[in-house]
Image (cartoon, rainbow, N blue to C red; front, top):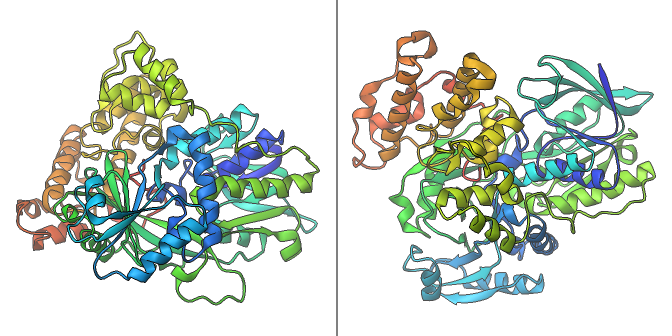
Length: 592
C-alpha cells in the first residue's frame, strides 16, 4: 500500500497546517501527516496569546515587527479564532522605570500602537489589578484559539485539494540515491480515512517538509542529518474563571511567570523557560505551578484565592545555529529558520523549518512555500494573507444568523462563535438539541458535527468544541459525550473513548489538587468510578485510592500534608500514574 504526492508536510501544528494550506492554494498536490490530533505538539500547549509584538519590542525588534504585521492579518483572515482582548504591560514599584520607557519607545519604533495609562486608568480597565500598579502600556495583544485555527486551516487545505492524515506517525524517512523520496508511516486508531489501524504505508513525494517543531531533530535523525533544536519547556496554569479580560504582562526584562492570558471561560498563567533534552520526556514539576501563582498574584492578587483547574506543559522549538553556544534558553532567538538540507547537508529533497511562534506561522508558511515552489517550478503566488479561513465571515453576517435562529442564549452564542459560517448548517435541526457540556455550552448538534469529523476520538472532539474543558473538567459531561458515540460506534468503543477522555482531563489536574479543586477532583473520581463500575473492578486501579486524603478541608491553607500526598500522585486512576511524564497528548488546556 502506498501513496504519491508532490509535497509531503510532516507535522500538524500551526506551521505545518499553514504550509499545507498555502501549497494547496497554489495548486500543489500536498499531503500532511501528523502522529496525533492536529495541534498534538507545541501548538496545542501554548497559552493562547496572539502577540502584538510588544513582548519583543526591546529585545528583538525584527520579531516584534513581524508579530504586529501578522497580528493584523490573522484578525482579518481568522477573526472567528481571535478574541480582541487587548493587552497591558504593567509596572510595579520595584520594576525599572527605564525599561518601561524602552518598551514604550520600542513599540512605537515597530509600529505597535501603544498608549500609556496611569495605574488608576489601568485598574479602571481591569479592576482586579494590584493597587500598587503604577502605570501600564496598552497594546493590541489578543487571545487566539489554536485548535480552531488549525482545524479551519486544515479544512481550507482540503477545500483546495490537499489531504490531511492524522494519527499517522512517521517511522522512517525514505532515501534513494542520496535524496529524500518520502516517508514511511504507521497508522494508529482514530485517524481520518479508510486506512486500518496498525497499517504501515509508504508515501513517496517529490519534496518533504519537516515542520515538526521541537521534534524536528528526531525527523532529521531518520534522514541522517542533524537539526540543532533546543527544546525548552514552559508551564501554563489554568484558573477556573477569567480574573482579567485583558492580557496582562509584567513590564520587566525576561523572566518566569510574567503573563496572564484570558481565554474563553478561563485565564492561563505563564510561564517558565527551562531547557530539556527530549520533547517527549521531561519532568512536570510542582514548583513551576507554585511559581505561577506566587508571582502573578503580585499583579492580580485575586489569583491567590482563585481555584486552579489544572496545569500543562509545552515545549518551545527553539533553534540555535551551529557555533552560537548560548547557555540560557531565554537568550535564544524566537526567530524562525528555513534549513534546506540540500545546501546544508548535501541531502536534496527535504527542508526543515524550526523556531518561530504561532503568531507568525502564516508568514513562516509563506516563506517555506515560496522555497518549495521554486524547487518544483511552480510560479503561483501566496494568497493566504487575503483569503479568509472557513467560518471567518464578517461579524454583521454572524449577527444576522443569530437573529434568524434566535441565538440569544449564551449556549447558542458560544456555538455561533465556534462554528462561524457553519452555524446554520450545524444548528438547523429538527431533533432535540440539549446542552451536553454546560460549562462550555456545547450542544448535541455541535458535538455530533465534531464526531462526524473526528470519529470515536473524544479528545479530538474536545479540541473542536471545548466540551469537557470547563470548570468541572469533564466530571458532568464525559459520560454524556461518550453516550453520543454509542449509536454508531457501539458500547465498547464508547467506554474506551470515555476512559481516554477522562484520563486526558485527569492528567492536568494532578498538579492542582488543593483547596476546592481537591474536592472537585474527588467528586469527578467518584462520578466516574460509580458510573463506570471502576470501584468494583480493582484491576482498573493502579493502587488503592487513599480516600482519607480527601478529609482535608478546602479552607485549611494552600496545601495540607494530605493534600500534598494526593497532589504528588496519591490519587491514581486507571493510567494516570504515568501522566507526570507522559506529555505526548497533554495539549494546552485553557485554550481548548
